Every structure is written in structure tokens, then in C-alpha cells.
Amino acid sequence: MLSSDSPLPRPGRLAGILERSPRTTDTLVAASALVIAYLVETAPYHQIDVRLFIFAFVACAALPFRRSRPVATLCVVLVATCALVVVDRYPTWICLGIAVYSLAVFRSARSAAAVAAISIAVVVAAEIASARDSDIAMTLTAATVTATVTIALLLGIIRGSRIRYVAAVVDRSAQREQLAVIGERNRIAREMHDVVAHGLSVMVRLSDGADAVADADPERSREAVRQIGATGRACLADMRRLLGVLDDGVEASRAPQPTLGELEPLLETYRATGMPVTLRERGIRPTDPAVQLVVYRAVQESLTNALRYAVGARHVLVSLRFDDEEIEVDVTDDGNSDVPTTTVGTGHGLLGLRERAALYGGRVDAGPLEGSGWRTRMTIPRPEDDRS
Image 1 (cartoon, rainbow, N blue to C red):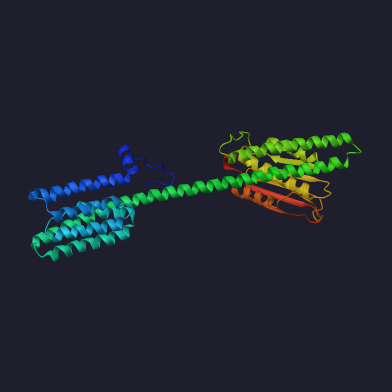
Image 2 (cartoon, rainbow, N blue to C red; image 1 turned 90 degrees about the horizontal axis):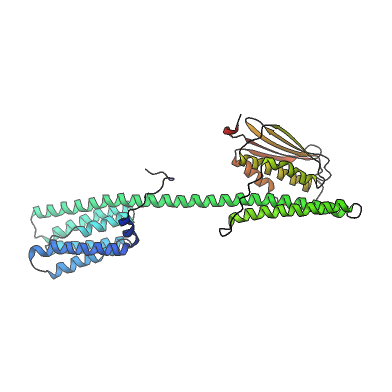
């Protein structure tokens, strides 16, 4: 049996042509059945029976509709077959077999089995009602219709089960693709939040600082303004890269995601705002770029929150611990988070950080420290292939 991830077999060239023109294919099948009916019913008698021609034509004319209306097709074919039995002619069973097969393929196997049993009973009843054949002929008719309908039913159930299985696999593949798209958009939304929150928080703090020292220290004010420009350009570049992924008509930037090698420049942007940030690191850094990105974003989000809410902070400590089994990011500050502040935050930063950590089986704890200050702590298991 194929798994949901297995590639589906491609139909052959002839099968592909037939599948692309189902109505034409069914019309050719009906015409072939009509020719067979003529050879079986008319040729042996060396004459054309009008009743026979009409009943055989009706049975064959219903076959082109076997895909869209399989129940109606079977009913028409069954009536025509019974009429042939009543007029004392041995009918062609091919039309009845095709109708039963189609019902099993394009409807459920259970309904097809029930209708097939009814069809056998109706044909046998028509044979008995004609009351002109011997017991041997009636037995032969009953055996023939039973064998024909049973074989057609089994073939239809096999084919129908295969079609429904393939449809289920395709549907599941589409659902997985949809979930992947949603997951990718959520990832982009988290990245966008980190970029915008970090950039705007730093720019707001720098602009406040530049305004405060504009008269007393113009050079320092101009330096802060230059930092605002640099931060804004970096944010715009990151946003173009992220939005390029969403636009199929735009070539997305191939710039890599941030890694721990860019951690020190990140800290410098916060220090430029006057935040007293200290980095303490222990252990060997992970080599997995995805894990490095999670650590980088955790530090970025924690420092952005400290920049917004840690009023009067005199010390902000970023502690990174890279053990063989676990990675920990611990950011603490001694600011007063009870003082109301005006921020550009969305309130979803910690939620996004928790989602990042959860993807790697980790967790995030955040809350006030005793006395004053705030602590954000993220722990994730270290990947097994990155352990020493």
C-alpha cells in the first residue's frame, strides 16, 4: 500500500487520453456494446427484430451517462435487459455489467452491492414471468446474470476503492500543503514582529535621546540621529526580505537569517540607546542555524521588552548557557516595570517567543523579580547531533 508521502503512479499515454475525454470514451463503449448486441441478438436469427433493436439501443444509449448518473443508468439498462428477457431473446449482459461496475466505482461499494442484488432478483423474476423457457434455460439465465453482476461488482469495488484512496491521498496532501503555508505565514509574522518591534523601540529611544541632548551636546544628538537612520534601513531591508517570500512575483532576498555571530552588533544597538547591557556566555555555541536564530530572537525580544518597560534600569544582564543537554537564555533587568510607559508594542512578543521555543520542545518563563526588575528565561533541548 502506498503511504501518504509516496508519489502517485502516472497513468499511461492511452489511459491519460481516455481520462481526459470521459464522455467520448463512454460513447465509444456504448457504440461497441451496440455492435455486440447486434452480433449476439440479430445475426443468429438473420433478421432485425424492431423490439430487440429498440431495447438494445436504449440500454447502450444510457452508458455515456454512467459517470454522472450511475443510478439512473443502471435503472435504464436493467429495464431494457428485463424487456429483452421477456421478449424471449437472450440479452447481452455487457451493458448490465458496465452499469453495475460504474455504480460501484462512482458511488459507494455498499449501495452498489445492494443494487446489484436487486438487479439479479429483478432479472430472474423477469425470466420466471416470461414462462416460456425450460428450467435449464431459467437456471442458465440466473447463473449468467449472477456471474456477470458479481464480477462487475467486484471489479468496480476494487477500482472505486483505488480512486477514493487516491483522492484521499491528494486531499490530505493539499491539507498538509495548506497547513505548511499557514505555518510559514505564522513564522513570517513572528519574524516581522521581531524586526518591527526591535527597530521601532530602538528608534523611539534614540529619537528621545537625540532630542534631550540636542542643545547641550549637538554632536551626540547627530550621532543618535545617524543611529536612527542605520536602524531604520536595517529594518526596511529585513522587511523586504520577509515580504519577498509572500510575493510570488518578486525575487526574494537570499540574505541569511541572523545568527549568534551577529549577537554583539545587536547588543550595541541597545547600548546606543543608553541601556546598560552586559553579556555573559558559558559553553559551546550550537552550530544549527535554526537554533541560533531562536536564541538570537529570544535575546532580541527580551531586550526590546526591557527597553520599553524597564524604566530606570541600571543593569541588564544577558546570560547564555550552552550545555550538552540544554540551552538557556536568561535576560534580567533591575528596572521599575510598574511605571506606566508609552510603547509601540503589540503584546504578542512573548507569545511568539513561546511558540518558537515550543517548536523545539522548550519553554519560556517570564515575570517580575522580587523587589524590582523583570526576568525572561527560555530553555530548549540541545539538538542531539550538536552535542559534544
